[in-house]
Length: 335
Image (tube, rainbow, N blue to C red; front, side, top):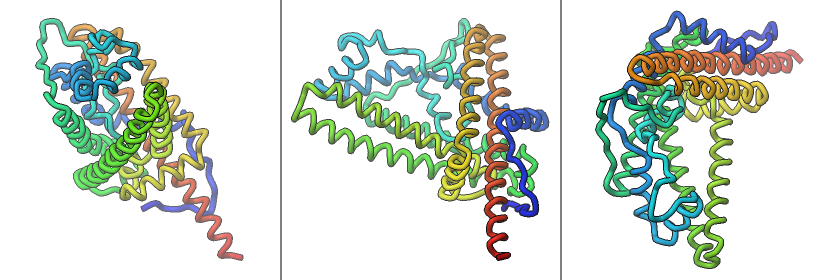
């Protein structure tokens, strides 16, 4: 899909230039911001699934010993859940998948209801229902992420010329993101079962070590998750910008990250700092309908520009690598 220029080598785009280009392009494709706006309005005014209630369902299904260990690690009393936050809305799992819009509700853990506004609450009654509900949210979020990434890719001229219609691209991106999510859930479930079986065996052999074992499992899981998210960071952008399958997209993402680790880390850190810094501003501004609307609109514009910038950065860096590789092949062929 990519045109290669081997007669001259060029300097890949920098992080700041990519971000600047992302916001310039967003001006002509402003409707991208409608996706995060609609999502946050739903999280703000729609039904709520409080995290504290979900946590209660989960701990009630644990064996008594494991339940007490969890309470000790979290530093809360087994007779009370006062230390567990109530505000996070579990419905934000809809946007906790690769390529999904960066929701303000997800960044803040939830959005306060406007004065006088009553929002319905829902919590599954069983652990099986809870797991199915949470997995279902992530699966339902894939078409949303597919639409968002397709719109972002279509905003980049160098990408737009080589991609199919928006409808076809949306279907393609959504299907491949669904595969990515399903594989991720399968690996997560398998790893959890494996680690849980090992922890249970050690708990029988050395009961006093249960808290340390759980802490170690949490550390290992967090580290592996961090590495996976880093090396596969550009996978959604690859699927949308290059129209490739999820397997090829994973490879392209790893190529860009491995060959541009410093600049990739810089891009991720800048995006994180911007998002987190402005999240503090939105949180202070969020009061009533006017403040809430301004915060949601501002966050949608801010994060959409960064998403377009990510597509630009990835496409340009991958194209630069392809050009360099092609140039080397031509030199070898000339010899």
